[in-house]
Length: 243
Image 1 (cartoon, one colour):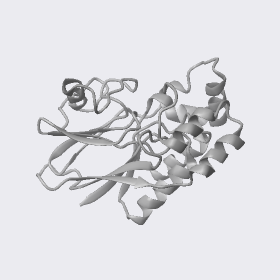
Image 2: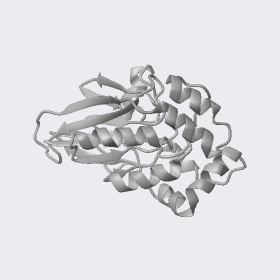
Image 3: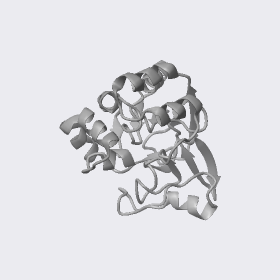
Image 4: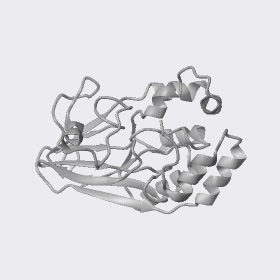
């Protein structure tokens, strides 16, 4: 059996990322995959990118990773761009769109927001017909087959559902969870690259971390308008329209 940790939506929150990586190490997980949004919102996207490149075997692109390199007159985005620097921006722009593999006889597809776009947002309370489209493929995917298991990030809201014999889950967010103020990630446990039906476990992990250190990091960084970010990580409650 192989264990794969799935982390997503770090958003430049280093105390949260460090706590999650330490928890993963203690569990002796075999590999770590990142489902995007390494940067944005929080102050230390540059460090987050460097840490993800060091610790993760596979990384895919999120919406922040996609648009952060584009021209902008937004001071907050310009601040993020300046801190990231040219090489990290190029790395983020080069990230692939999906991770796909067979595990315990099931085809698993991982993406940031949907199989069609890093900007399409689908919540666990949306109608079943809309949620079921997350099993579909698109031109952005590596395979045309319908997924048996689909996992994603983006909405910062961990959940696990069964729809018409298929499994849909969301990892929640490491650095900006929006349902409770603890870092969230998932472990997949199964027979990697095996087409033979076998047990497959999806485990949700919550990791407390030093939120007040993350608050101080934001204040001391000089980032523009950190107030909403600070409220979100302290309360686990959405404050402003997120990109």
